[in-house]
Amino acid sequence: MLVRLLLPLALASALQAQVVHVDADAPPGGDGSSWAAAYDELADAFAAGVQAKQVWVAEGVYAPTQPLDPSDRRTVTFDLPRMVRLFGGFDGTETSLDQRAGLFSSTVLTGEVGAAGRHDNAYHVLFAAAPGSFAGHVVIDGFTITAGNANGVSPHDSGGAMRLSNRRLTLRNCALSGNSADRGAGLASIGSLGKLLIEGCHFRANRATLRGGGAFLHGRWCMVDSVFERNFAGQRGGGLYVSQTGANNYPGILSESLAQNVLLHDNRAAVGGGAYQHTQYLTASGGASLAHVRWSGCTFAFNAARDGAALGLGDQVPGGAVGILLNSIVWDNESRTERSLSGPAGRYIVSNCDLQDPLPGDAVISVDPGFEDPSARNLRLSPGSPCIDAGNNLLVLYDYADVDRDLDSFESTPFDLDDFPRIRFTVDLGPYERQPD
Image (cartoon, rainbow, N blue to C red; front, side, top):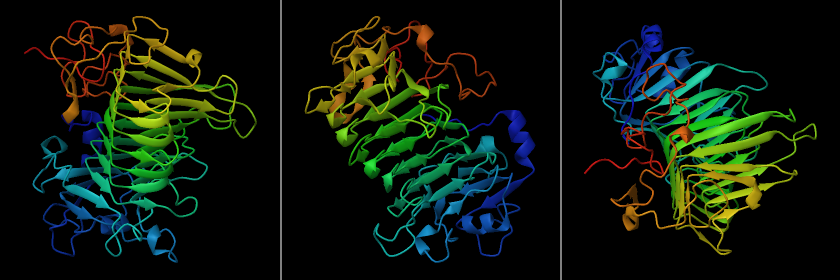
């Protein structure tokens, strides 16, 4: 998956004059005004104030030092200020964002702050909360976020890599790996009033004791070009757990979350929803939001759970969560009940899909999708796959992330998970478009 390094030009130019530089190899005493005078710790830049600024971070390993609660060392975190734009992956020579070296895997934000081992790690590597009010848009772009361990009491029981509450967030070009929590070991978005956009991210090998190994999302969200791989939940939602995607406490409001070009493989849950679980709850006022998630161009493969190895729908309200599958593949998932899709069949809306457990719908097939090398988890389509040209171009979701940075969010998503054109003739099933040999 290629990365997209450019912001829209208007935003980039507006923020360019307020850049703070951070480089782990810089000598102490810098003021962040240039690479030559960079801060050597990201925590020092935050302490100096970075609200409404861009922060450019060169490759290196950075750990938080400022605790939310001075009486508890494990509350140390990068507490995100209002409207901060945090960009990683620089080599320390760039003068503009479009020159960024893309060293995302080696620009590491870590929760390893004590003795070696997970037991005394920071609860959250990143923390973004604004109780009761909207507090501006935050961008996190180009990092590996690891070793958070949110195993405390609320709010420190969710969001090992990052805990988000009532903030608008764009998370782009990030890997969230090796984190743990009770809920949302990678990302926890709890009671969020703001919009959450996830683009080009990889949730890998995160572990939740309860729900949401990769992520726990509550509120409206959009996701594109992302991967959930080898995450685990002790109850439900090995890859992703969604809890009431409707607007908080406002019954009867329709709220749709969107996922385009997402791959979920080898995720595990002990109970249900190996890759994805959606549970609908009553709101505080006793009503229910009309919430659902629309999956287009996605693949669920090699996930496992007792029931609903790929997707699980469950709720405490009549006619709650709905699963919408478009141009997608659900194959080779493992469930004791032999059902990869759990929940009433009438709550799934399916069109142009390849389902190992077929459901009623338009243009639904149930044949081996012909992955290139499933044992090596290369889940692109091989020549002759029945999933090639089997989709519906009208079901490709609109480009809500503006992945081609042309300031047009109303066109169809233009790229697949490999950044090849998403529609060549008729769109293929799954997140990858078969390219000419």
